Length: 309
Image (cartoon, rainbow, N blue to C red; front, side, top):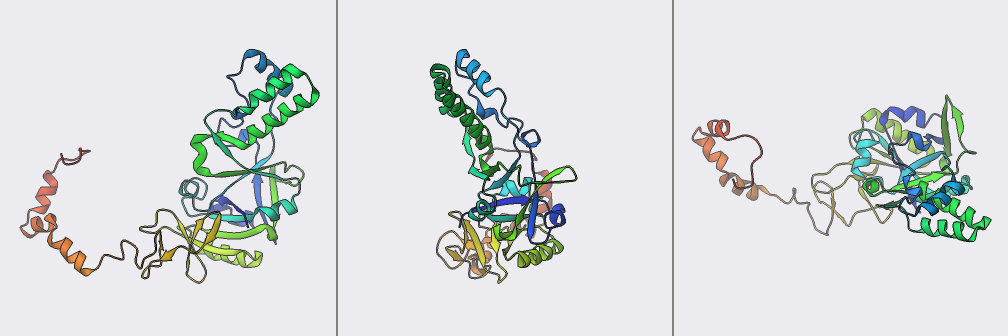
């Protein structure tokens, strides 16, 4: 089952789940996106002036389409920071096959991240300019539309974005906002952020039960390098190969996921003997023993220094 994920702030919990058996969220036009250079990749400005004139004549202006955005992963730290209220919010995972079964004209595609427009745009413009056939003009317009909505500049690649367009006939106007209400059969998982309040977690867990979705709580570990998930039963889960699944192994003490098979995570593997040896070799303890630590710290130069300076 392929899942895509949408990040939310904790402040919208009630609005997202306002309709029984559904999840509702706002769809936006390009002018409302957080990237001021949206749609720029729909035109290659390095083509010659003759082709650019053909582009302008045939395409004229890239249409403004309602769009909603997802991510391929529920554990992208910058996404939690920007859209998940710094891990206080939540994420909803949707089954793509179910979405397209319910909304049959919905176009769902992964974003292609580029440093420049697709080379295919020039070839489509050349065909439209030289052959002067209606089908070539339509091919150019379609290529431009696709590249404009499903391409972004490389600096946004951390979002791992998936975008859905062609949703105008499915949205409802609610207080001036275009809302898409998605039925529960499309909802596969709900993740409460690692810093979410107990009130938010309880509300999300109840909603997950009502929708028949899996429920997870996000965790930020001490050694695992990205957020991981905890099930209702307390077992850890990781996101790997487009799936939420058990990790290779869990730490026998703290249950944090391990990247390799083994009994303990790096921190739990530190035992009393290690701590005692480290304490005996700690120069700060020696200074403190002779009453010199505070003076040493006060007189030590502050500010950035080169290593070993």
